[in-house]
Amino acid sequence: MSCLRISELETLAAALVEGAGMELYLTPKPGLVDLADCGSHPDLSVAKMERSIEYVSDYLDEIVSSLKNGESFVCQKNIAIQAENRLLDNLGTNTHKGFIFLSGMLLIARWHAASAAERDIRMTLSALSESFFRTGDETSTNGQQARKKYNAGGIVMESINGFPSLFDEALPVFRAAVKRHDCLNAASFAMLARLMQTVDDTTTLHRAGPEGLARVRRDGHALTRIIAEGGDYLAYLRELNRSYVGMNITIGGIADMLGLSYGFLIASGEISLESPLANSREAACGPLDRRRSRPAVVAATIQADLAGCPAASAY
Image (cartoon, rainbow, N blue to C red):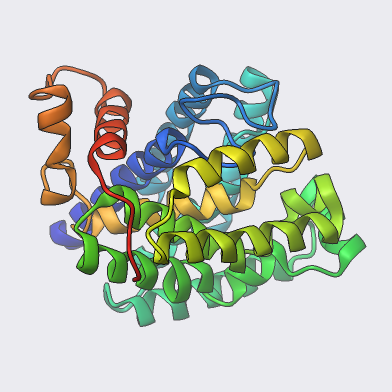
Protein backbone atom coordinates (compact mmCIF):
# COMPACT_ATOMS: atom_id res chain seq x y z
CA MET A 1 0.00 0.00 0.00
CA SER A 2 1.53 3.31 -1.14
CA CYS A 3 2.14 5.91 1.60
CA LEU A 4 1.78 8.61 -1.06
CA ARG A 5 -1.60 7.20 -2.08
CA ILE A 6 -2.79 7.22 1.53
CA SER A 7 -1.52 10.77 2.00
CA GLU A 8 -3.41 11.95 -1.07
CA LEU A 9 -6.59 10.33 0.21
CA GLU A 10 -6.23 11.97 3.62
CA THR A 11 -5.52 15.31 1.95
CA LEU A 12 -8.69 15.02 -0.13
CA ALA A 13 -10.78 14.09 2.93
CA ALA A 14 -9.51 17.11 4.88
CA ALA A 15 -10.05 19.37 1.86
CA LEU A 16 -13.65 18.22 1.49
CA VAL A 17 -14.33 19.23 5.09
CA GLU A 18 -12.79 22.64 4.41
CA GLY A 19 -14.88 22.86 1.24
CA ALA A 20 -18.07 22.34 3.21
CA GLY A 21 -17.01 25.17 5.50
CA MET A 22 -16.24 27.49 2.61
CA GLU A 23 -19.68 26.84 1.13
CA LEU A 24 -21.33 27.61 4.46
CA TYR A 25 -19.49 30.91 4.92
CA LEU A 26 -19.85 32.20 1.36
CA THR A 27 -22.21 35.19 1.74
CA PRO A 28 -24.72 36.09 0.42
CA LYS A 29 -26.31 32.94 -1.00
CA PRO A 30 -29.98 32.78 -2.04
CA GLY A 31 -32.18 30.58 0.14
CA LEU A 32 -29.24 29.07 2.02
CA VAL A 33 -27.67 29.40 5.46
CA ASP A 34 -24.76 31.85 5.45
CA LEU A 35 -23.21 34.51 7.66
CA ALA A 36 -26.12 36.90 6.97
CA ASP A 37 -29.13 34.71 7.78
CA CYS A 38 -30.63 31.22 7.60
CA GLY A 39 -32.19 31.68 4.16
CA SER A 40 -35.22 29.44 3.62
CA HIS A 41 -34.22 27.21 6.57
CA PRO A 42 -35.68 28.59 9.80
CA ASP A 43 -34.69 25.33 11.54
CA LEU A 44 -31.00 25.84 10.73
CA SER A 45 -28.22 28.22 11.73
CA VAL A 46 -24.50 28.68 11.14
CA ALA A 47 -23.80 27.02 14.50
CA LYS A 48 -25.91 23.98 13.64
CA MET A 49 -24.28 23.71 10.21
CA GLU A 50 -20.85 23.89 11.83
CA ARG A 51 -21.81 21.00 14.09
CA SER A 52 -23.01 19.12 11.03
CA ILE A 53 -19.63 19.65 9.35
CA GLU A 54 -17.96 18.11 12.39
CA TYR A 55 -20.03 14.97 11.80
CA VAL A 56 -19.04 15.07 8.13
CA SER A 57 -15.38 15.23 9.18
CA ASP A 58 -15.74 12.16 11.40
CA TYR A 59 -17.55 10.34 8.61
CA LEU A 60 -14.84 11.03 6.04
CA ASP A 61 -12.19 9.86 8.50
CA GLU A 62 -14.12 6.60 8.81
CA ILE A 63 -14.25 6.23 5.02
CA VAL A 64 -10.49 6.80 4.78
CA SER A 65 -9.85 4.15 7.44
CA SER A 66 -12.16 1.71 5.70
CA LEU A 67 -10.40 2.19 2.37
CA LYS A 68 -6.95 1.84 3.93
CA ASN A 69 -8.08 -1.40 5.60
CA GLY A 70 -9.24 -2.85 2.30
CA GLU A 71 -12.90 -3.10 3.27
CA SER A 72 -15.61 -3.54 0.67
CA PHE A 73 -17.77 -0.90 -0.98
CA VAL A 74 -20.72 -2.27 0.97
CA CYS A 75 -18.91 -1.42 4.23
CA GLN A 76 -18.39 2.15 3.06
CA LYS A 77 -22.04 2.40 2.05
CA ASN A 78 -23.02 1.33 5.57
CA ILE A 79 -20.66 3.93 7.06
CA ALA A 80 -22.48 6.60 5.03
CA ILE A 81 -25.90 5.39 6.20
CA GLN A 82 -24.73 5.46 9.82
CA ALA A 83 -23.40 8.99 9.35
CA GLU A 84 -26.75 10.15 7.94
CA ASN A 85 -28.53 8.59 10.92
CA ARG A 86 -26.19 10.35 13.36
CA LEU A 87 -26.95 13.68 11.75
CA LEU A 88 -30.68 13.12 12.03
CA ASP A 89 -30.51 11.76 15.58
CA ASN A 90 -28.25 14.49 16.94
CA LEU A 91 -29.31 17.54 14.94
CA GLY A 92 -32.91 16.69 14.09
CA THR A 93 -32.31 17.39 10.40
CA ASN A 94 -30.50 15.90 7.42
CA THR A 95 -28.28 19.01 6.90
CA HIS A 96 -25.34 17.58 4.89
CA LYS A 97 -27.03 14.36 3.70
CA GLY A 98 -26.30 15.10 0.03
CA PHE A 99 -22.75 16.16 0.78
CA ILE A 100 -22.13 12.94 2.69
CA PHE A 101 -23.00 10.95 -0.42
CA LEU A 102 -21.10 13.16 -2.86
CA SER A 103 -17.94 13.52 -0.78
CA GLY A 104 -17.87 9.85 0.15
CA MET A 105 -18.25 8.72 -3.44
CA LEU A 106 -15.51 11.11 -4.57
CA LEU A 107 -13.13 9.78 -1.91
CA ILE A 108 -13.86 6.15 -2.79
CA ALA A 109 -13.49 6.83 -6.52
CA ARG A 110 -10.18 8.60 -5.96
CA TRP A 111 -8.86 5.59 -4.02
CA HIS A 112 -9.81 3.08 -6.71
CA ALA A 113 -9.02 5.24 -9.76
CA ALA A 114 -6.01 4.35 -11.89
CA SER A 115 -4.59 7.84 -11.37
CA ALA A 116 -5.41 11.29 -10.00
CA ALA A 117 -6.46 12.42 -13.49
CA GLU A 118 -10.01 13.77 -13.58
CA ARG A 119 -10.89 11.39 -16.43
CA ASP A 120 -9.85 8.32 -14.39
CA ILE A 121 -11.70 9.54 -11.31
CA ARG A 122 -14.85 10.10 -13.32
CA MET A 123 -14.73 6.67 -14.94
CA THR A 124 -14.31 5.00 -11.56
CA LEU A 125 -17.04 7.14 -10.03
CA SER A 126 -19.49 6.13 -12.76
CA ALA A 127 -18.77 2.44 -12.24
CA LEU A 128 -19.14 2.73 -8.47
CA SER A 129 -22.38 4.65 -8.83
CA GLU A 130 -23.86 2.05 -11.15
CA SER A 131 -23.06 -0.53 -8.48
CA PHE A 132 -24.49 1.64 -5.69
CA PHE A 133 -27.84 2.26 -7.37
CA ARG A 134 -28.17 -1.18 -8.96
CA THR A 135 -29.35 -2.66 -5.68
CA GLY A 136 -32.59 -0.68 -5.88
CA ASP A 137 -32.88 -0.46 -2.08
CA GLU A 138 -32.93 3.32 -1.90
CA THR A 139 -35.03 4.52 1.01
CA SER A 140 -37.82 7.04 0.50
CA THR A 141 -36.46 10.57 0.85
CA ASN A 142 -37.56 14.00 -0.34
CA GLY A 143 -35.01 13.73 -3.14
CA GLN A 144 -36.20 10.27 -4.18
CA GLN A 145 -39.81 11.44 -4.17
CA ALA A 146 -38.95 14.49 -6.28
CA ARG A 147 -37.03 12.37 -8.78
CA LYS A 148 -39.99 10.04 -9.15
CA LYS A 149 -42.65 12.76 -9.27
CA TYR A 150 -40.85 14.97 -11.78
CA ASN A 151 -38.85 12.30 -13.64
CA ALA A 152 -35.65 14.06 -12.58
CA GLY A 153 -32.15 12.61 -12.64
CA GLY A 154 -30.99 14.42 -9.52
CA ILE A 155 -28.06 13.11 -7.56
CA VAL A 156 -28.45 9.64 -9.10
CA MET A 157 -27.68 10.67 -12.67
CA GLU A 158 -25.16 13.24 -11.44
CA SER A 159 -23.21 10.42 -9.85
CA ILE A 160 -23.65 7.86 -12.63
CA ASN A 161 -22.45 10.44 -15.15
CA GLY A 162 -19.30 11.13 -13.14
CA PHE A 163 -20.22 14.46 -11.51
CA PRO A 164 -20.57 16.61 -14.66
CA SER A 165 -21.65 19.57 -12.52
CA LEU A 166 -18.25 19.41 -10.83
CA PHE A 167 -15.91 18.53 -13.67
CA ASP A 168 -17.68 20.07 -16.69
CA GLU A 169 -19.24 23.13 -15.10
CA ALA A 170 -17.95 24.35 -11.73
CA LEU A 171 -14.21 23.71 -12.10
CA PRO A 172 -13.79 25.22 -15.60
CA VAL A 173 -15.78 28.33 -14.64
CA PHE A 174 -13.80 28.82 -11.43
CA ARG A 175 -10.48 28.40 -13.20
CA ALA A 176 -11.41 30.85 -15.95
CA ALA A 177 -12.58 33.44 -13.41
CA VAL A 178 -9.41 33.09 -11.35
CA LYS A 179 -7.23 33.69 -14.42
CA ARG A 180 -9.04 36.95 -15.10
CA HIS A 181 -9.51 38.31 -11.60
CA ASP A 182 -7.24 36.48 -9.14
CA CYS A 183 -10.13 36.84 -6.72
CA LEU A 184 -11.59 33.99 -4.69
CA ASN A 185 -14.85 35.82 -4.14
CA ALA A 186 -15.61 36.60 -7.80
CA ALA A 187 -14.61 33.09 -8.86
CA SER A 188 -16.80 31.60 -6.14
CA PHE A 189 -19.90 33.46 -7.25
CA ALA A 190 -19.16 32.67 -10.89
CA MET A 191 -19.07 29.01 -9.89
CA LEU A 192 -22.32 29.36 -7.94
CA ALA A 193 -23.98 31.00 -10.94
CA ARG A 194 -23.02 28.11 -13.22
CA LEU A 195 -24.21 25.50 -10.75
CA MET A 196 -27.56 27.27 -10.43
CA GLN A 197 -27.94 26.81 -14.18
CA THR A 198 -26.93 23.17 -14.38
CA VAL A 199 -27.60 21.17 -11.19
CA ASP A 200 -30.78 19.09 -11.29
CA ASP A 201 -31.56 20.12 -7.71
CA THR A 202 -34.23 17.89 -6.17
CA THR A 203 -34.34 20.01 -3.00
CA THR A 204 -35.60 22.85 -5.17
CA LEU A 205 -38.03 20.53 -6.93
CA HIS A 206 -39.33 19.24 -3.61
CA ARG A 207 -39.91 22.75 -2.27
CA ALA A 208 -41.04 24.61 -5.39
CA GLY A 209 -41.60 22.15 -8.25
CA PRO A 210 -40.38 22.56 -11.85
CA GLU A 211 -41.32 26.26 -11.80
CA GLY A 212 -38.99 26.83 -8.88
CA LEU A 213 -36.12 25.00 -10.57
CA ALA A 214 -36.71 26.99 -13.78
CA ARG A 215 -36.60 30.17 -11.70
CA VAL A 216 -33.27 29.17 -10.14
CA ARG A 217 -31.79 28.48 -13.57
CA ARG A 218 -32.97 31.85 -14.91
CA ASP A 219 -31.49 33.54 -11.87
CA GLY A 220 -28.20 31.72 -12.43
CA HIS A 221 -28.07 33.02 -16.01
CA ALA A 222 -28.80 36.54 -14.74
CA LEU A 223 -26.07 36.26 -12.10
CA THR A 224 -23.58 35.19 -14.75
CA ARG A 225 -24.55 38.19 -16.86
CA ILE A 226 -24.27 40.65 -13.98
CA ILE A 227 -20.81 39.34 -13.08
CA ALA A 228 -19.74 39.54 -16.74
CA GLU A 229 -20.95 43.14 -16.99
CA GLY A 230 -19.20 44.20 -13.80
CA GLY A 231 -22.49 44.84 -12.01
CA ASP A 232 -23.36 44.65 -8.34
CA TYR A 233 -23.84 40.92 -8.07
CA LEU A 234 -23.84 41.00 -4.26
CA ALA A 235 -26.90 43.27 -4.20
CA TYR A 236 -28.55 40.97 -6.74
CA LEU A 237 -27.86 37.93 -4.53
CA ARG A 238 -29.30 39.67 -1.48
CA GLU A 239 -32.48 40.44 -3.41
CA LEU A 240 -32.63 36.84 -4.64
CA ASN A 241 -32.35 35.65 -1.06
CA ARG A 242 -35.34 37.76 -0.03
CA SER A 243 -37.34 36.36 -2.95
CA TYR A 244 -36.34 32.76 -2.25
CA VAL A 245 -37.26 33.05 1.41
CA GLY A 246 -40.67 34.43 0.45
CA MET A 247 -41.21 31.59 -2.04
CA ASN A 248 -39.68 28.91 0.27
CA ILE A 249 -37.08 28.05 -2.37
CA THR A 250 -33.80 26.47 -1.37
CA ILE A 251 -30.90 25.18 -3.45
CA GLY A 252 -29.43 22.53 -1.19
CA GLY A 253 -28.17 20.31 -4.00
CA ILE A 254 -26.34 23.26 -5.52
CA ALA A 255 -24.82 24.03 -2.11
CA ASP A 256 -23.58 20.44 -1.80
CA MET A 257 -21.95 20.62 -5.22
CA LEU A 258 -20.41 24.00 -4.41
CA GLY A 259 -18.86 22.56 -1.26
CA LEU A 260 -17.60 19.55 -3.22
CA SER A 261 -16.07 21.88 -5.81
CA TYR A 262 -14.29 23.89 -3.14
CA GLY A 263 -12.96 20.66 -1.63
CA PHE A 264 -11.60 19.41 -4.95
CA LEU A 265 -9.94 22.78 -5.63
CA ILE A 266 -8.36 22.84 -2.16
CA ALA A 267 -7.04 19.30 -2.57
CA SER A 268 -5.55 20.15 -5.96
CA GLY A 269 -3.81 23.22 -4.55
CA GLU A 270 -5.90 25.65 -6.59
CA ILE A 271 -7.36 27.18 -3.43
CA SER A 272 -5.21 27.77 -0.38
CA LEU A 273 -5.66 29.96 2.67
CA GLU A 274 -2.07 31.04 2.02
CA SER A 275 -2.51 31.67 -1.72
CA PRO A 276 -2.69 35.04 -3.52
CA LEU A 277 -6.42 34.45 -3.82
CA ALA A 278 -6.75 35.13 -0.09
CA ASN A 279 -4.20 37.92 0.28
CA SER A 280 -6.86 40.54 0.89
CA ARG A 281 -7.73 38.94 4.24
CA GLU A 282 -4.44 40.15 5.73
CA ALA A 283 -5.25 43.78 4.94
CA ALA A 284 -8.82 43.50 6.17
CA CYS A 285 -8.36 41.35 9.27
CA GLY A 286 -4.64 41.36 10.05
CA PRO A 287 -2.58 38.16 10.36
CA LEU A 288 -4.64 35.11 11.16
CA ASP A 289 -4.31 33.46 14.55
CA ARG A 290 -3.27 29.91 13.60
CA ARG A 291 -4.74 28.64 16.89
CA ARG A 292 -8.25 29.49 15.69
CA SER A 293 -10.50 26.72 14.50
CA ARG A 294 -10.46 25.92 10.80
CA PRO A 295 -14.08 27.12 10.27
CA ALA A 296 -13.17 30.49 11.80
CA VAL A 297 -10.14 30.79 9.52
CA VAL A 298 -12.24 30.01 6.47
CA ALA A 299 -14.89 32.51 7.54
CA ALA A 300 -12.29 35.26 7.94
CA THR A 301 -10.88 34.50 4.51
CA ILE A 302 -14.25 34.58 2.80
CA GLN A 303 -15.36 37.77 4.53
CA ALA A 304 -12.08 39.59 3.91
CA ASP A 305 -12.16 38.65 0.25
CA LEU A 306 -15.82 39.71 0.10
CA ALA A 307 -14.84 43.17 1.35
CA GLY A 308 -11.77 43.61 -0.80
CA CYS A 309 -12.60 42.04 -4.14
CA PRO A 310 -13.94 44.21 -6.96
CA ALA A 311 -16.90 43.11 -9.02
CA ALA A 312 -15.87 40.74 -11.78
CA SER A 313 -15.81 41.63 -15.43
CA ALA A 314 -16.35 39.15 -18.22
CA TYR A 315 -14.91 35.70 -17.62
